[in-house]
Length: 253
Image (cartoon, rainbow, N blue to C red; front, side, top):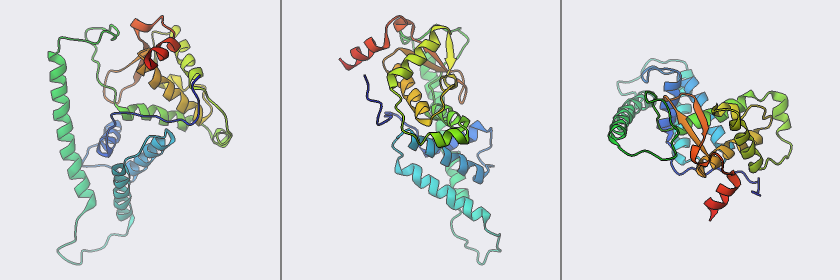
């Protein structure tokens, strides 16, 4: 039995603050050069709170970006004043936008190279499920995973938020069983569906951990057809009939 407390999530590869900003901009179909600083700042801080709730280690660069956004937001709220000299000093908003534009170019070039590599590969993961030939599979974005957790948090009403203060254990194995049972009657389910029925924030977090653990031991597969698209969860055909506890012991061995 896995000890349910404390809850920790460890992720080897994690995008940085610029990736989070681009994720927020793409999610709302915004132009990098024409963003609402106040709204982007709010959403950015919301994601940082989700990361902290999941006990993800928030690197210093995320906090530096949060400070920069808050500085820019504060400046936009101040009454406009006529310039007192030709040299007004650095403009944090313009500098940030310039960095985002440049970073976006590099990201697009990186995606192009990844797609090239993918199209030229002649080897595939044996555990990959069989999909229609015309469908496209891409790497799942970490911030899209966090977005699903964020939506689940937001569905909790105020009464349930108060109840969250009560100490209650949520064994991860119980949540793993819940996910596997859901998939026994469905070909696939949305990541958001896994959080349905959860009334405590700790329960949502444990469900998230359960999904990550099931993917780690190759009991589940996850796919996403488009960037910022829905994340679908499948049973791995190779391990469909294997009990996840057996897979976990094998992983530990």
